[in-house]
Length: 336
Ligand SMILES: Cc1cc2nc3c(=O)[nH]c(=O)nc-3n(C[C@H](O)[C@H](O)[C@H](O)COP(=O)(O)OP(=O)(O)OC[C@H]3O[C@@H](n4cnc5c(N)ncnc54)[C@H](O)[C@@H]3O)c2cc1C
Image 1 (cartoon, helix red, strand yellow):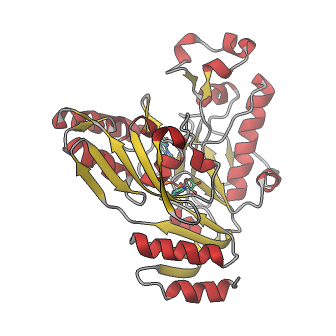
Image 2: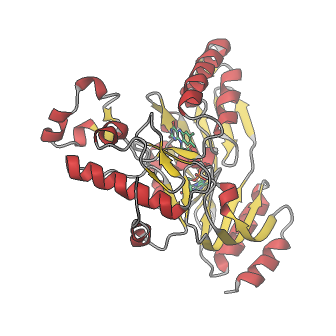
């Protein structure tokens, strides 16, 4: 067991590890929101990262791993403990398989596959964040998810590096086993793809990126969709009866449809706002805080619950909140 200062000093001795005290996590989230981490450590070298991870875990301080911060709400108080990030970004194409380190941008993996004439990832073009984050949340778009091509995931289980085959990852819609095993850290992924035409794949990806840019301008400080869509088969019959059939896509009802009915578009608290064209998209218009963000999320959930009796579930992940009740305790305040 060692304190913050000792942990900082010991981490700083590991080669190729960038360590800092009081690092503003806002700088590591696309929302641009979040207070300081007691200790922040990142490395692009696998062995060095693992050494830092082991050391941080043995310090007795709480530890968390982040990726690109594109799906994260970090509390205004920040994180008491050590935040780690693996930035290794190697991507290797071997025949019909592509392996990528967890710190690679998902976009690099999508592009490497497309350029090699390998199909299966092209609809994920333009989803921001890392490969590790994509596996953690089973990222997907336009009817496809990364889980459909994952062959194996290599991860640190707290003691050693192991691999899980696809079925062992327990993938489901925006879910994986890694959400239930917060002590497991994804290090790399191997995907198996089908042959395709490189120029057709590039065109498909470019079209998707162009569509996405209209919805999510690159400068928008957001996390994409805040809430998961709802599985049609999981909805009670009286709710199904209210949903127009044309709204149902790939067996899901967009959370945005319920939110729209509940008057979410344009809601705001402080500088945190719901887009006026997309009821499931919240952005930070300037000086937004996690407090405002949590309050707005709670209000959106409350409205949908009141109107439809449904409990929306966040796709976005929380960091630095003691427990769910702390997220909820930030809810008071005026919503416009
Ligand atoms: C504009 C915009 C559009 C988006 N569109 C989509 C979309 O179409 N589809 C979609 O699925 N998502 C979408 N997202 C959400 C986000 O991009 C994805 O969830 C992305 O995969 C998150 O990756 P990240 O590296 O940023 O993860 P982070 O936000 O850093 O972390 C998310 C979670 O993953 C965990 N995590 C990250 N890396 C690791 C690791 N190596 N090991 C273990 N756990 C890890 C973190 O602990 C955290 O709980 C969008 C986000 C934005 C900002």
